Picture (cartoon, rainbow, N blue to C red):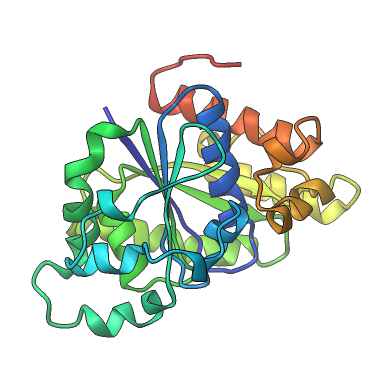
Length: 260
């Protein structure tokens, strides 16, 4: 069974793409077949895996618009078992392009149907907005991971996202669930970090991942080298944290399997 997970937060700079890349690499490291789909027109997921946009023609845009097959637009990465369906700048205009199209909310879901059996996990890296790309991701996904930076306005933004997820569940995808809220850029030296941690766990309870991702320079450096943190510096606190998050993801999606 293929698990499809969207990484969503309408607020930028929360570690969403970094999380998608590193959970994808961590799942691949434990022998899962993983496809990462970059739905952000900035293309950071591709860059973080070592791809230069000008060097390839493959793009999620044509796949969603129905003029290209998903299988023909998938790239192999340097991480064994991890594939990428890359972004393009054309995705920035997708909201307008989909206007008036039949089943516009389900374009991504329908396009991925022929390749589902080839992957254990499909990860959807959403843009920092609640437009048609994010809606397509949420109608396609089984579950959502919400990366949340430990800062003052964290809870304010997540409440809006949770309302959106509830709406999508009611109108378009009754099977959609929140897999977890992940605290990122966690710096235990600051009281604000602990306050946000306490508030988030009080508000959302057990759906908050036990693991937190620390603020870590090696995780920040890794994308500039085109590598996930796991392959840039395996022993770094950030890489190890993402391995533990991947363990929690497998436990939550596959019924308590421990891969640690």
